[in-house]
Length: 99
Image 1: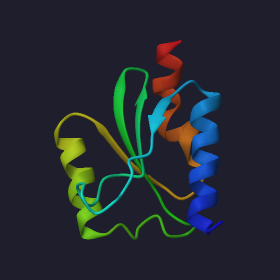
Image 2: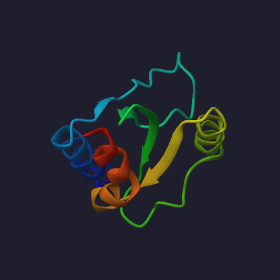
Image 3: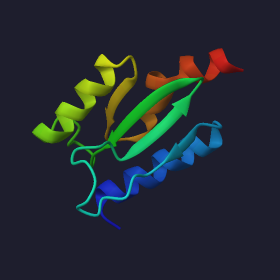
């Protein structure tokens, strides 16, 4: 498994443990480029999560950046993580507010 793949697996585990609905869009060349790795609903909020290998959090592509900005502009939450330990800080309030 790649370093990014390990981060994705850890992020999915965290989301599952906290009851966050999520799915991974399949990239097959026919869809929209730059879509985040995970589309989620946390505490009633739309969240787009882009996962990166450790230390690569600031290396989003221009297409990924475009999609993350569009999510943000539409009122959603657009995040880039390179470690699942960032999720309690970034999503914890949404999870707690829903309980």
